[in-house]
Length: 101
Image (cartoon, rainbow, N blue to C red; front, side, top):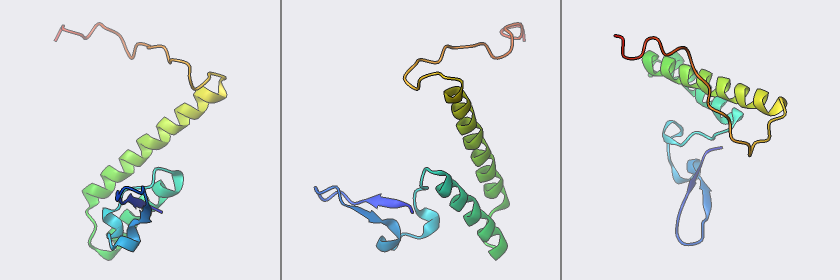
């Protein structure tokens, strides 16, 4: 469930749906369930005919990137690296193409 924080000095959290915010305009819940909901919302919009195929493709690509990042983080933790340890930098590719254009 997505939420909107209403700041009236009390830090009260109110579900966005109770405030009348359309689901497509609510912030995405940053969990696997929220990701699934966002993907299914795009599928539903396409089926209704009011979805944008380019937007749906972009959302799918973002979801793929999020999942790959989560997988990498999981593998890193599984390998025994503590989450507080700084990840050392590593080279991606070679430097032969830099400035030799």
